[in-house]
Amino acid sequence: MKHVVQTPNAPEPIGPYSQAVKHGNLLFVSGQIPVDRNGRTEKNDIRRATRLVMENISAILEAAGMGMQNVVKASIFLQDLSDFAIVNEVYGSYFTDGIPPARETLQVARLPKDVPVEISVIAVKE
Image (tube, rainbow, N blue to C red):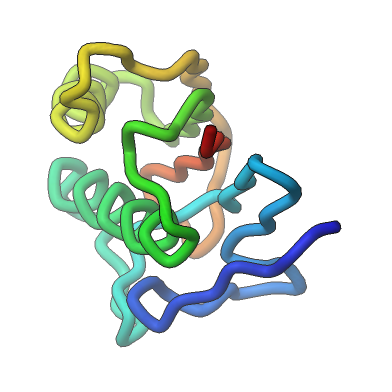
């Protein structure tokens, strides 16, 4: 049975989707963009934008009783692939258990609210 995971510590969805959906021991976190809880968007600093996205993901994982160590798959979408090194550095700093998740990184033409980065994850609680 699936359950919606919602937390006030991450931004409200901007469309008809849930922050995350839990099904059994799996958690599917919707793509997070660099928007803070007050609706402010970070578009100009890719380092701050990526950190904000990862903090939003962390808050959603925490609301589901999980953490970054539970993430098994990530998808990163960038408006500009030349931001890859910075995004990779910030993203990688959140995975400290020595087992980073499987992942792909894609350059896309445009993201919601014209942000530079969006990340979604899948987590498992054993």
